[in-house]
Image (cartoon, rainbow, N blue to C red; front, top):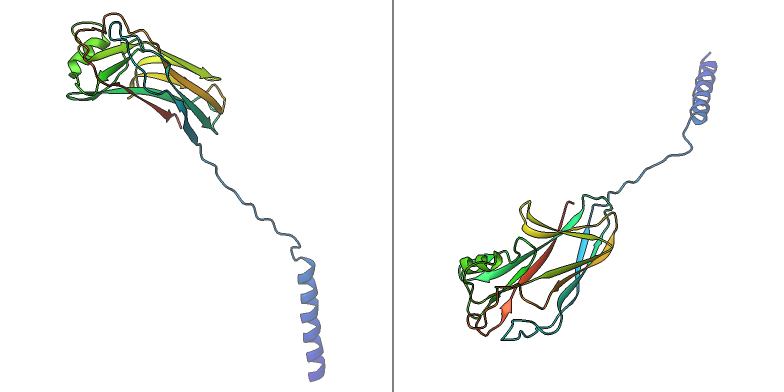
Length: 203
């Protein structure tokens, strides 16, 4: 009797083991996921060397331009770049663009006041040591639009990618000063400077 019980117990165990192997998984899948964030790259390709202005007319000799290469992995139209500008004054740094997209240069060796710069940017009043020049923006294959008072950027050039991921921006200063902003007896000799900044927005 005892022997029979043992045999029956072993049989049950073996049958149960066989049943388990029949329903076992023979394949398992594991899915890996990674998220690539939106990113941009701005690289200065070339910039012009210092040029000289005619002391009688203010007209500059040579080419005063900078070329930037822009890259983005985002093809959405919400991604764009903004070009802003700034000049130094005796009372701090202010925007160098005027309402029409022209750009001001100030004498770094004899800084004008912010009031004098603003007068030059509005083409009114007396503005010693400030000269304003027209600007040309060439964007390929992007498009550029000058917009006064855009978001927190103030006067700026907006660069739309138009669904493209790479291209170039050329910021050129035209040689002839804006009428009424150069005075040969008031704009003293020295180094006149301005700064432009390209910022990626919309990411």
